Image 1 (spheres, rainbow, N blue to C red):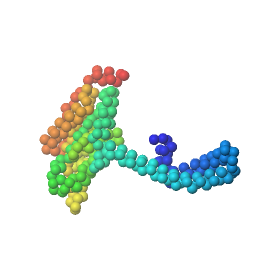
Image 2 (cartoon, one colour):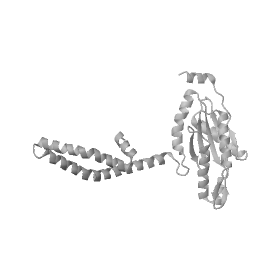
Image 3 (cartoon, helix red, strand yellow):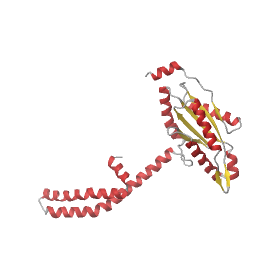
Image 4 (cartoon, rainbow, N blue to C red):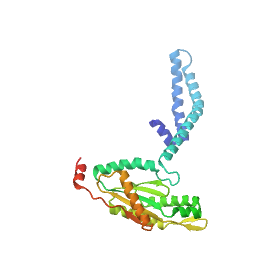
Length: 261
């Protein structure tokens, strides 16, 4: 997209139409007498007047059609961009976009030996809620859970819907203790929330699995696997709790090699 097109989209439809008209009317007024001079026939003054009047009539009509098409294409492009990156129900990132961004962040963390952690957050007994209150209530509750989780995170943290009632979160610059603190805040916030549904207060809890990166050679998929095992342990422990995968200690010599580049 050119700079001029981006500028028109930024100022809006009506200001864009006025700007295009103001620019093109003098252009036509100048081109008409120039054409007369080149042909050697006609009155340049009259030609300038006719050119300006024609532009004043035609430019708004044609410009409106062109600009309307341009704005419609931009809106369609924006909708496609949203669909490509966001989960349609919760509004958080979708799984595909999460891994696209997380892989880059993961590579940076490994290169510089920085701390990072990954959380898997899963709603407890969600099938029972769908069975008792209906899937529409379950959808609204899942949206509320996503908002509660988002409120517990920092701006650089990356969250996405992992599937079903499960959310995945990447926490850059976060050590194991910090990751556990975030996970506990999420658990408490969700447990304290209630959804108003047909005169009833509906709520649920979450189980959280935590896996921390400390400079080892694991892949992002391996970190997700570790968090999944920790989540399973949380479910097995009775739900509404946080469990962490075993911390793999840093290998200091390896980190020194990374950070010395």
